[in-house]
Length: 423
Image: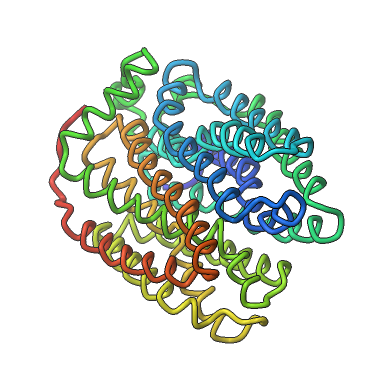
């Protein structure tokens, strides 16, 4: 199998995948903001770590809950208008935040507007593109698109940290807004809904299979489709196991490290730019780890991969409090390497397991699994901030997260590889 749909033309699935990668990249610019700006907002407005963490909890909750409805909206209205609206919301929330003077405005702009926008361009979107456009290389494409979020962190984190340090957090917010809105023209020109819209089959599908040229008709009511996906998921033991483990994934990545790593490093005397550089390096390694995980998912039992990933993450987190210092010591780099390779390596095997159970309904059902991920992230974003405010340190938060990772490993090991025909 090559990248070419014919002898002379690139299969359009790869164009859609490339545009999707850039769209996720633009949306991910905001992911670099909370950790960098937490202390500047505290110093300017007096907002506590818990207050900023609560705003991010709203963001992450909506980021997750939006996913299944966004997937259903894409079924109803198409990918292009949903992506355009989502990127516009991210840009508006980031740009208007330069005018805020009260914490409720932080919740409205960062929490609600940006949360809705980023939620529409999250893992449910990844599942939509991978399921519709790829029969072959689905695990690899899932890994690459998942890595786009980490790539956004890699690209924007050093920029946001440097601009915030030298010019203030408002200029950094405007950069994030510009990054999101700049992607809209690409989406408008190149994005398509189904391969059948161009007279094609999914990449790797049999072009002579008449069924492959007909997109499956799903419920057209957006809310009906979303809740039907939830109903189907709730009847499956695998859904409960994957949703619970993915909630822990969210707690131990976006919620804890993504939001609080830089403030935790600051507590140990590490400058913001150095801590941001370490977090960006985690993003670099995340790209490598997630793409490799996608490749492995096409070849290795995804349950085994998840057990290994969660166990390794737990070991990394339990050591983190003893590894932080004013400088990036070799021991700190050990954490960065192991944790970075593991960050969202869990996504490709989780999506593949969902695909085995739920078929064409995977985007909506996985949207609900991802909602659990972000609910977990929201709990950790707020909870870790409150622990820091009460105890003056993040140590307890890291230890609790490590224990939860071991529980997640056990949950994933309990998933059966029995295909359930729900579609």
